Amino acid sequence: MLKMMSRFLLAILLLSSLGCEVERRKTDAELGLNLQQIAGRRVYDNLCDQCHAPYSTRGRQGPPMKGVFKKPYLSISGLPANEERVGEIIRYGRAKMKGYGQNLSDQQMQDLLVYMHTL
Image 1 (cartoon, helix red, strand yellow):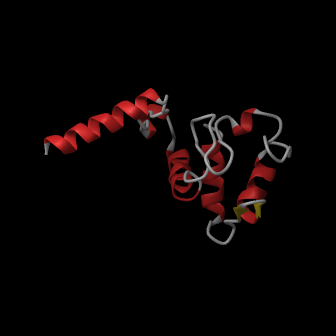
Image 2 (image 1 turned 60 degrees about the horizontal axis):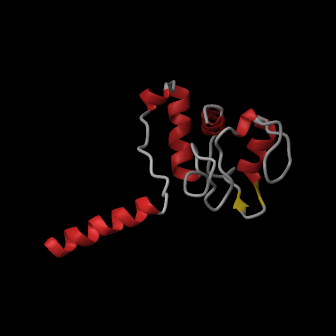
């Protein structure tokens, strides 16, 4: 048991010394999300979060989404950063990203886009 705890503490120390960006996930209330944004966050968590970091400027497999609608153009494609273009990418995919048009209802798509405005 002591050996396991020592390894755990060593792992934590190593991660913290590497400058690992670990932040507690904020609740919907802390973010001030309304019901539609909360629904959109659930969609994001299920489909987007694994590749696109929502509240970080660091990407994962895909570019980060922090401030996606606050910029005039999308970082990689150079397309306008508006709901029409972002919605097209989500529906049909682009480059390495698969499309999710068959997986999302119109309401889920709207909820997702509304949530993405909060990033």
